[in-house]
Length: 83
Image (cartoon, rainbow, N blue to C red; front, side):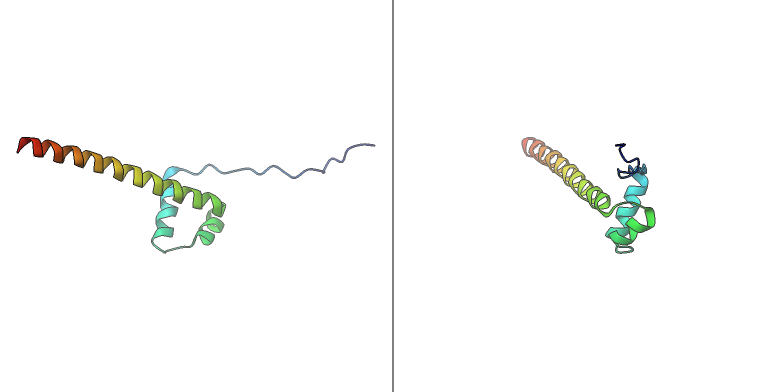
């Protein structure tokens, strides 16, 4: 018995998406210009990938805000010491 040649699923090839395009897509979705579903069909990207990007961007924004709050606290402490 010979194994079947077409017995497996074809491997899915993924596109490389640039950071600028990711930000553009997320911006359009955030502003309500397009939906996640429409963006996925338009650019040939899975909805889960777009959702993942949005989640990563939110966590990045929160981390950057936290850093700026820490810097602001340091400045205020220095100002208190000066006074």
